[in-house]
Amino acid sequence: VKKTLTVAIAGLGTVGSGVIKILESKMESIERKTNTRLVITAVSARDKTRKRSVDLSSFKWVDDAETLAADPAINVIVELIGGADGAALRLCENALKNGKHVVTANKALIAKHGVYLSQLAEENNVTLAFEAAVAGGAPVIKMLREGLSANNFARIYGIMNGTCNYILTTMQATGRDFKDVLDEAQKLGYAEADPSFDIDGIDTAHKLAILASLAYGCPVNMDALFIEGITRITTTDIHYAAELGFKIKLLGICEMTANGLLQRVHPCMIPVTNAIACVDGVYNAVVLEGDSVGRLMLEGRGAGESPTASAVVADLIDIACNRFTYPFSVPANALQPAKNASIDSHNGAYYIRLTVIDRPGVLSDITQALSTEHISVESFLQKGAKSDGNVQIIITTHDTSEKSMSTAVKQINSFPWAVEPATLIRIFK
Ligand SMILES: NC(=O)c1ccc[n+]([C@@H]2O[C@H](COP(=O)([O-])OP(=O)(O)OC[C@H]3O[C@@H](n4cnc5c(N)ncnc54)[C@H](OP(=O)(O)O)[C@@H]3O)[C@@H](O)[C@H]2O)c1
Image (cartoon, rainbow, N blue to C red; front, side):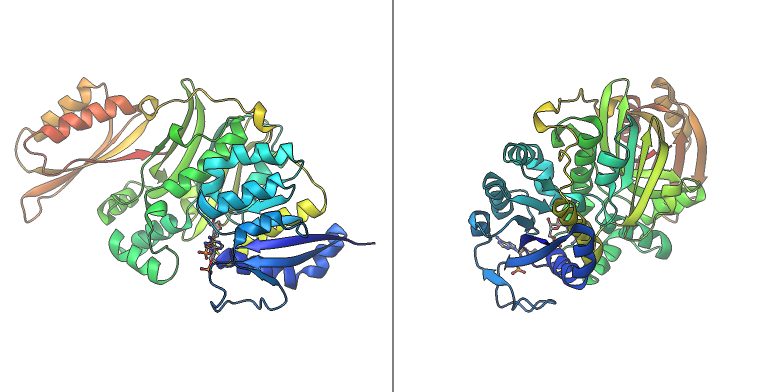
């Protein structure tokens, strides 16, 4: 006899509609895999009258999504509302307390309250699953928590925001500037009306913090992250990057360093020979460096209706099959705060672009500022005088510490010949 798993879907936007489409179109194959019939019993969103891409007439409509948490007829809540707090949090919290499984795609919620929700899930013997929260359709959480669970990780890094990757790729391909490409991305629906979470690096930070928790067994800690977005990236830098053999990408990187766990999100100059430099457009990719397995890269669509819904439905299938894992790999109360390293302790190479007044003595000032901080230059480019009399100087350095670099840049910015503050981009190796 087939079992039944009753599912309520809260939030019927991009992802919610995608989940309904997959559950309906793949009902038979899901039943064969799980010996369970997944039945959508109720749905909820803000506006009942809104026209949707799915037919909702056979489902019970609920005006207040939060009431789903108390409905005894429901086994699983699929939370696709979004937002770190508010209705999404209250729904998930109460559902878990009432012994319902919860599946969510909400990275903001998991980054802020994931450990607490995980505790609730464990106390109530139910599942909290959030595969879709990181890298959308690419099952990186499952890979980290299950397939690679025998590993310690030296480093995990990735392109985890499709909007930023689309903007940077398009800037590179067309030579158009940031604002112009962002406007177009908003028109095409690749960027939100309020794009700040994406372009300021916050969305990548949420995802990175979740991966770091899974990989290093520590509670998610957003305060430990260094975050810098892509708004300062210009076509000039993209152009020089190409000349030097780099592409600029927004990376989220967590790594175990001599000073502790360093989690950072910022634009990087990546050598074009590195596989992740070739991940373009809306694609995401995560690279995991495990001590036993070596390096592994997972690339796929990090957002969009059906890739994200693919991950949500996979979580539902796990629940139907009674496949249980601790949400953060280990029991929530076994997570141990990490010793966090600050960005100041980061060691690496840098790209610096300076706009300077073309006059004698500039080069010796720059050399002096760098050598005082023991920074050695790897390459130096000077681009001829512009009509305004200014020149561009592009320097790449050998490895040095962030602290030395920022002291040197402060000094350089204070010279009277500096036309604008230096642009500093970290080189990724
Ligand atoms: N879009 C993606 O590609 C993607 C990828 C990965 C993860 N995610 C995550 O998935 C979640 C959903 O994203 P989405 O893109 O599908 O968002 P969306 O298209 O904006 O849809 C949000 C849905 O939530 C409903 N809603 C808003 N407030 C509500 C409330 N208080 N009670 C009940 N329903 C409410 C909205 O109702 P109305 O339709 O009536 O306005 C809408 O149907 C977010 O956490 C997001 O971060 C999205």
